[in-house]
Image 1 (cartoon, rainbow, N blue to C red):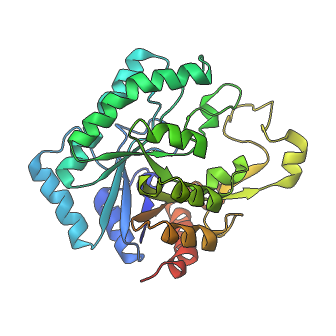
Image 2 (image 1 turned 45 degrees about the vertical axis):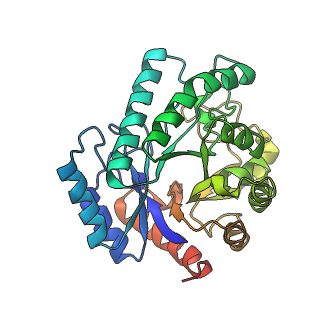
Length: 310
């Protein structure tokens, strides 16, 4: 396995600067953010996938080679079931552009979400997904690329804090595998949902789905029991201006939360995963400026690097 990070934590940095930092800091890979702009928090554009002629593709390949890095995925995490059909079409068009760029660069994975229309029932959303996602899967497969779906619930996308991305549980993973999608496994979300991160990996292997784990993101979660006692597992009912604050858990850097990283990495080895683990930095305590972000990444690197077999 290789260790890298997801570039969305550095909104204003160039791809050249990120490659230099990753190499000098001892990372092996980058998962590159490819939004068309900074559309919301934790988004960035480090690769303009709409303007990637072969000459620029050669430059990007050379940049990664010069810094001895792997480009593990080109990622654009948006709502593929957006209720506004015009906006949904824009999202799908940009996702296809990410696929085309990945194929041009020799990258096997494009990161995305399933999403959800919050005005429909879960059953209606699943039916919608079964209509609109297979053409995207086929488009990617035709370019030699797999769509890897992160299992983040995206609860802030739903007005009442319910899951806004229908890919948050092993039950839904099995459903999406049937559509040809793959998994970008992130244990942090499983922990606060009450799902055993190690048990989920073992379930994948037992069900014959181990090869569907195309990519891994490393983020931790710290549970705040006093907040859970106050708000319950559904989180704050009076959310105010920030729909992402549950009141009883928070994302942390690996090693600063409650995920059993030794158990997770061991389970990844046991199921045969040999790809990239990309640290996803969403720790509010190590945010605010690039220096603090770098320190947070370094803490995560020191936590995870000793667990990987050289």
